[in-house]
Structure formats: structure tokens, C-alpha cells
Image (tube, one colour):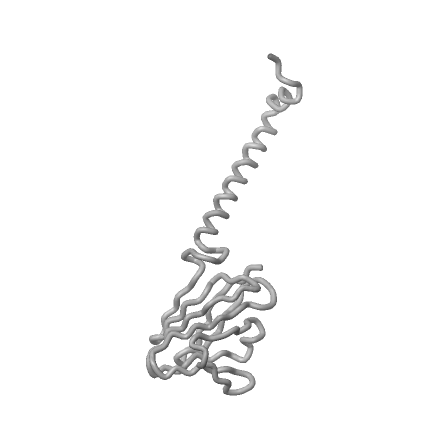
Length: 157
């Protein structure tokens, strides 16, 4: 049986076949990279790159490295006894929305520009925050235990 003329033309055009082969391979590699990035947590959710952990002067902070606009994310602060509670900087409200804290009665307002959380004994404080504004790289700044923490977060749409 004879091949249709269009298929015979494609079979004779080696340059077209090579371009198609390379295009298919680039597509497969791109899909593999996206799946691997998702498994590692680059897009948020679970995975080793999705959350960060920082230890400084007995204060342990666990935060989401990847966040999404419109979703509330937890930030856990493990504070030792006698340490100053975390302080939210004045510009915190410009790029983050604080929904609540757990335990709920730890938020004290020091001044109109700043908030302070008080911890009198070892405690784990969870801040439930939501990124506001635009997607992109941001810094999550907190003052906990007398140390200023500057934590990187990437916000996805």
C-alpha cells in the first residue's frame, strides 16, 4: 500500500522531523521539571522547599516559604521562657493581613504603629497571616526574643 502524498513529504523532510523531535523532547523535559518542582514544594503546599525553619537565640520560627494570595498561612513561633514576645513592625499591615493568633489572647497593642505579643513562659504562638497586594518575592520581618528576623517568602497568585 502506498503512503498518502502528505506523509511521504514529511518522511522525506528530515529537517522537519528533527525539529519535531527536539520540540517533543523539550516539552517532556519541561513537564518533568514542573512536576519535580511541585513535588519539592516550589508552588506551595507540602515539600521540603515549601516551609522554612529558623533557629536563633532559642527562638524557633517555622514559616511558609511559598504562599498564595488570598490564603491564610500559619507562622509558628516557639518562644523560650523569659524571652520577649515577637513584635510586628509598623509596615507589617502593608503587605500582610493578620487574621488571628493562637493562643488568642496574646496580642497587645503598644502603639498605633506596632503590635507586641507577650509570652511569660515557654509557649508556641501561631500567627495566621495572609499576603495582600501583588505576587512576588517578599520579606516577612518579625522581632522575636530581641532578635530581628528577616524571612524570605515568595507569594504566588
